[in-house]
Image 1 (tube, rainbow, N blue to C red):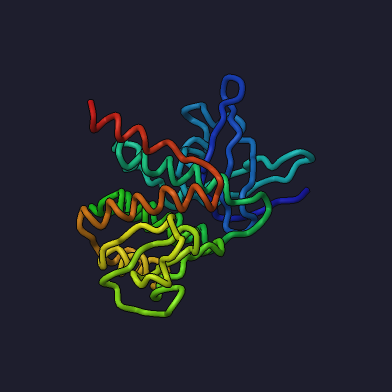
Image 2 (image 1 turned 90 degrees about the vertical axis):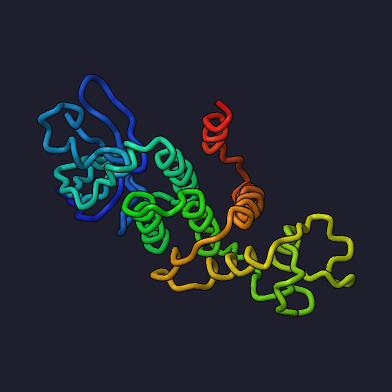
Length: 251
């Protein structure tokens, strides 16, 4: 009989039958794991709390022939507040969509898990702008995955003045306004100095300092425009859950 003890967070749940469900757990030791949670939908089940969406728990898993089953779980952090805020829940669902795409089964991704947990903490326990928190998550995650843009200055000439920079999707980094640097690059978009500084901080800061800044609405708008396209081009998928927030704003 083989057991696995690990910490993990529920990133997907599918109801099975009258009382069971299959959950996907993003674990510290094994990346993404699918596990059956028998009886977890019964109100008195010992598994009911720890198998809720976005609940971070200590798990004891039994390895069966086809998949794991949850023997026990003890809640570490339920991130319960997210469920009571439709805006923060929508941003969290967007983040989980990305996590489900990039985390592989039985492939540890400890840096990604730490970023994910820190992001949920910022969405749950602070009053930080959830859109900024999400943009920080997106760019830092792509950096962890090896898609970090060059943000130390102009990728072509090395100029570090942030006053006249553009972001080039073609070159994956900053370029300056010099003719030789921006020549034949129709992908480049002009950015504010504040946007350049924010992107540098997100890519290069230590994890404990990652969320320690704020930006203007104009800079946040530029970050959103850049990250929507950069995310789509790097992960080859359109993420549409945040479109729901536009419909709320237009209602």
